[in-house]
Structure formats: C-alpha cells, structure tokens
Image 1 (tube, helix red, strand yellow):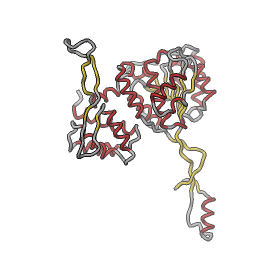
Image 2: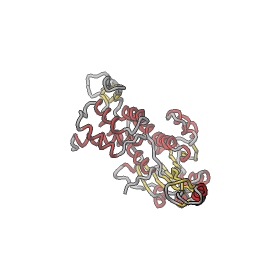
Image 3: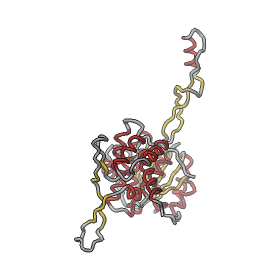
Image 4: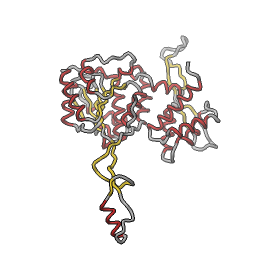
Length: 367
C-alpha cells in the first residue's frame, strides 16, 4: 500500500508537471522548492498549497494567470483570493457518484467534494471507461496542455555567439575599425520547431477515443500553428488543421465535427496513407498515427505506404489506445502490417498517456 506521504508527493509533483505542460516555468528545481516549502506548512490547507506553489513554481508575472487556471482545474474547483491577508478558499465544484444509500430517491446523486488525489487517479484512467463528467474534466485538462516541440536546424544562418565565422560582418567591422579585425562575428543555423503531421482515426472502433484525440490535436495546433498538420481518417482522408486553429476548444471541435464526413465508419488506412503522402509534406516531420489498426482494406497496401512514410519522415509514432492494456498484443492485420515501419508504439488511452506523447514530441524519449 502506498504511504500517505508518498501519495501526497506524487499528487504535488503531478501538479508541477501539469504546470510545465501549460507553459509555466515549473522546472525541477522549482518543484523541489515547492515540496520543501510545504514541509513547513500545512499541506492539507488549500491556501498553503496555493501560495507555496505560486511563490515557488512561477518564474514571472506572465505565469500567474496560467498558474491560477491550472490550480483550479487540477485541484477540482479550488479558488484562491487575490491577496494573502484576505485569502478565501472555497470548493465550488463537486463530483456526483451513484448513491449507495438505499433510502435515497432514485437517481439522486451522492455528492462528494473532488480531491487532488481523485484528479491524479483520473489522469491514469482509461477514457473509454469514464463517465461523461470525468471525460469533461479530462478535456479541460487537455485544453490547458501546451506541447513543446523538438527543434531542428534550418538552412537559414543567423548571427550567433559561436559557429561558422561570418567573414562579411567581420570584414565590415574591421574596415570601420581602421583595418584591424578587433572582433570576430559568427553565424549558426537557425533552430525551428520540427513539424508534426497527426492522423486521427475516427472510425467506429475508435469512437470512444476519437473526441479526446482531436482535443489533443487541437492542443498541438494551438502550440505550434505553423508546424502542425492534422488529418482525420475513416473511409476517407480529411484535412482539419484550419478547423482546429480556433482558440476555443468547443468551437474548434464543432468545426472539426462538421468537416469530418465519415464519423464512426470503417477504416481503409492503406488508401488514406497513400492520399496523405500525396497531400502532406512528411519529409523530416514527426508523423503521429492514432489508430487501433483495424484495417478493412488490403494490409499489403498499408505496409507499402508505411514503408514509404518511414523513408520520408523523421520519426513515426503510432498511438494505439489499447496499448495501455498490460496484456495488449498487436494482433490486428493493420498493426502487424504497420509495426515494422513504426519507430515508437505508445498508448493513447488516458490523460497521462497524452502528456507522455506531448513529451515525446518535445524530444523526451523513454528507453
């Protein structure tokens, strides 16, 4: 059984991880300071946790609005007052569970306040097994997710402190200095975020996960609009990047739903990947394919297109929601055809899995 202190530390570290995903400067040193500060405070009081985190995890004034939003979402409705001297903390959001009281009226919920540990459990729960309220909570957390992007060197050279000697600027400076090369100038290749091409399966077998996958795709587009392309696949390929560029997740999801004509249909991944390679530039990109691999078309065609894709892409990541099951085996025809050409096969069944995928897109890889 996990000790209460270890469980508390896990919850607090999970909060710092959520802040980092939202763009707050809550690095590992700040997280250690946060935990150290709470050793001298009462971690059972929301106000102590709020102010300890605000004073240690935020790197500057720009982090404060994001910190407040993340705190409210992660700790399920906790609101903190604007000043220490007038601090008022109230729990305004509740989770409803079926009543266990036989005397309660039919349909009457047993209302319990949501806790940080419950949110931490929710992070690892399979989305397909969640209630509608729990999925809404996960979707709110996905809306806060800000994904870093692995950097690549571009062809363009920019001024730098080191790198390739910039003979032209060095010579010009020497001429202005009377012919003496008193300073050396350098250039280096500009760093740009690596492009991501995401393909989300919206067929019938992926119905339980499709909405969450598209919300994750929305977070990707919001983080790097110019370096992200998103397509849906079912019986046809549909580009939905423009629809997902809206800031409001609800508006973006509504636009994407209207643009996708083949919700909950079949899947012809081979034909659609062939169309993808015709429409999208996958050269040097990280290609993310989110699908369970149920292929109704020719598995040989899928294997051929995956081989082409693997030659063009920088990395191919296949996200399969069923990978979160410890006993999962890639036995479907589509997965067997695609697996030899996949660099990473990862889970996509929970909020924690999406956070891990975001880390992989930022260059963090697990052995």
